[in-house]
Picture: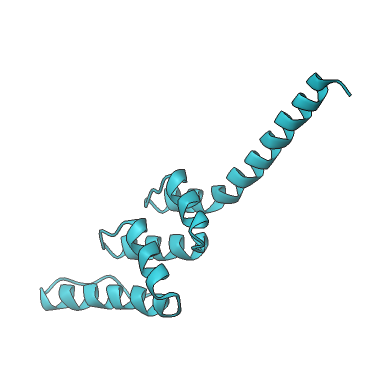
Length: 113
């Protein structure tokens, strides 16, 4: 094989691997976009590199944003990294705190999910 052929194969292999990696983030990214809770690709990739389950973080991010909590995805990922076993409780506590505050202010809180 000539050096040009080897180089072309290496570049095309790298391109295929890169496409597969980016496509694995397309689902969570699209879910955020459709839920009007935008997240950048770099944030999703950084979370995966930090061994954070991206889909879990994205679902929690969308739930919190839909309840009107102005949270960033980095805050949610940090909460997961601090206590992975208590993460669901963390999200529920945030939502219940908001519901309690809105109820005490006389506002109608969003329905529980």
